[in-house]
Image (cartoon, rainbow, N blue to C red):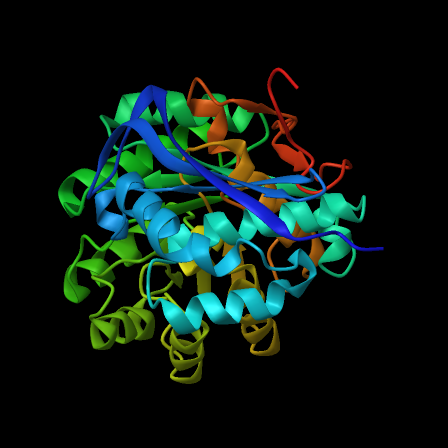
Length: 358
């Protein structure tokens, strides 16, 4: 069975307003901006990919669109879709960096390939290990009472919690205390500092977080301050997780080898490749390190790819930060939803989501 050649690559910038702003230590999101990529074969098979893009990620919708239209399109149009592994190698050989642009294009090609074989993406990736993903939802930085109320509603809906914090220990500890009091002792809570702390203050905060039953402290220090990350890990009574400090499988290997972390939070758009995320997950599994996937708010196309990947790899945690597409409006796709705190793996072909109107 021949899937055919890639005939067209089309890109569209999407802007989807948040229903409520997401405030973090480094961003104030009111609109989710990203790039939708569509790949069409000469046999009429279509596949979609999406990446969320914002300046602190190092890319914007405009830069990603330019890279795909002016550099990457010529490397894929006319190629046999079944030669995807070689196409991806050629892309990386010709262009370094730009992981989010590459991820959107690769996802579209993978989606088209799976649709061509009439398979769910997770089956094409090796088969389904689990059928659903439990959701961790973000809680925006705000007043303790407001964060507690938002967290209480999310917990009622069966979700675990990821609290964004500001980098000020005198304000962040009361926020965490208020949330824990509101949701009770049984709800999973992690916090994400988005690189906002120095090592000494992060250690002080970690000790306070332990008193409130927080299980994971994500990216406490700036991404490249690896000695500081190691220091926090050494003295923290709770688990330390790397996010921005891991941009490649080589980064993950180095942090794991040097015992700098307890877990890794990664994602297809962050890393730029489904295969590279798989390598990170396998490294984590071999070394007893937790690995989870995450996504900021954007089209559910991106979440669908992550759900299929998490479903197909034992080394990825069944508890992931997905489902943020529910906090935006205007997504042109449907077919994925959060029900009782979980996302079920779509059963349709490819990503299992569809463009409205088709």
